[in-house]
Image 1: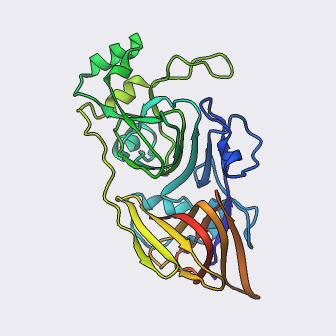
Image 2: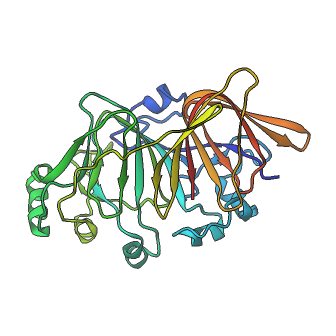
Image 3: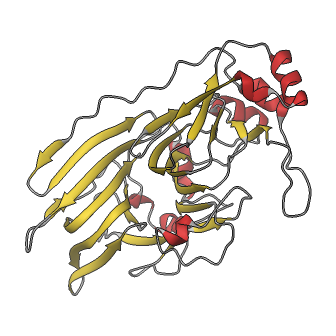
Length: 335
């Protein structure tokens, strides 16, 4: 039976991280700073693990190797990964206590040729919270030549060339491969991306890591893949909530790599909301607020998963029918 299961993330201690993933989401991860949690991941640099049900303790990748049918039949742009237990996507929480480096990600075509067949990285950010002065970098203010950017990086003046955008809670941004970007201090983000960890740093504010060393920059590769045209100021898309009894949902993002919906569950007493994944694709439910339960038919009667803010649930393709109950806000992600 294709039953859902809870995931446990891997953690990253990048120097710009804070403590909110523990404070806000009760992760109880002994890492400081805690910059990222890779909530749903089959990437070797940060796998997630099953935390409930019959596969508890196994890596998600090992489960999907045993049960490739859990992934589904949808021919996504990176479907070839799925043949070895790899998912085409990766889902994270990000706590930016300090500014992230100014960076750019390659396209799939560039990565396959120059990075031993890896995927590029297109991503989406959903802002869970943001300080009053929080902002992000999104592309260039004006079209700029490579040499001009290179000299500005050397002089430490490259920030003058970058477009900065104020952000607030509930904003969303689509970051296509090739877009120069950075998350600014004070932002708490849910990120949905291709299954890749390829990042080319252009500029890192001359910071020192825990060993007293400057982090590596990848200026030549970054300028090879960066879109050097002026970037239009990102505008928030029109979002339409569709209501049914006990639940409302809206499409946040659809691209060739993933679809992301926001789902608001608000049930009373014995009321439940039915949910299932079809045979085309797995689903991932990332709980970004609230608490409740997911129940479903098991081998010995009904089974339950208690769900809290910060939890991540993997729902196999062609799943059993789930009954959702409580006050919950999910990001509903599918390939």
